[in-house]
Image (tube, helix red, strand yellow):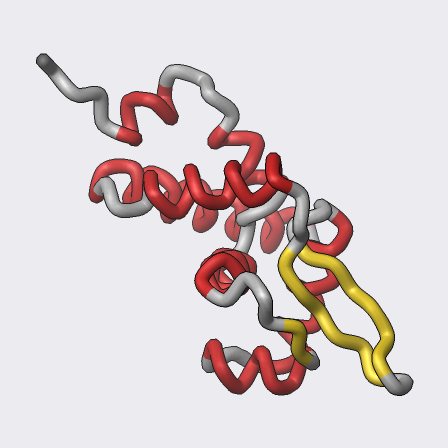
Length: 127
């Protein structure tokens, strides 16, 4: 039996392009998605999350807000402090699981990285 690589599945139009353009369009968002998927019960402040994933707090703040807008993360106030956590939506979690699993395939990972880079280039040239 011939296995189809995640890359080939991405090319066949299963929605990865849209996902990469709209949700994982920066490497900071990719890191945050991975972080929350691996730590699904974590609820924390932007500065601490930035420290844990090793990214600039301003970049993380923007990415957290964007991911909240897409429904991947949820935001709430706890004692006047804003904290973020992973969505409890089963569909969103399944999509993230599928994406992160696909990333174990080298060809898909290269494809996804190139999509993010192209999106970053487009953002720079339109700004």
